[in-house]
Image (cartoon, rainbow, N blue to C red; front, side, top):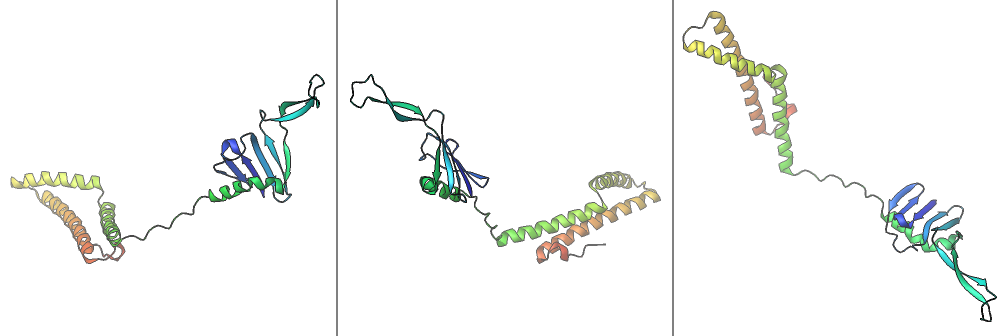
Length: 199
């Protein structure tokens, strides 16, 4: 398992899978920690501005030891399993940050089941009607029926017009029969696939 910890980004990657975690407790002078559990070896990479005190001889000092402590850039540190121990908690945080499995959808209530059944019937009736008589055709038939009825009221329908009006009335009667069948099905408790629609 290959582990990478980047405190500044609050990110831990294990075998290429990265997750955001709280790394505020990790030494802020660390740029990254790389560790290979199979090889039991890794490295702590410190930031470029990270320093560490180092003793340097200074013969000008009156101190008997003649040693001065100076700050020098901190070099990277090779670690083994024991050296990685302080960072083991980061792996626990990574595991805790795993996405939760999706929760199963709740069972629908009786009201929801009934609403879906009724909607299915209404939708089936609508498709059945529109397949034979699209909306634009229904609009044209309604408009033509109004014209013919006006002529009929004047008692001047021709034989062809009477035939045409009768055909339109047959269409509306069929559409009404489909809607009545839909209403009856809704009341009876059947589903859309159990309905015998008017021919």
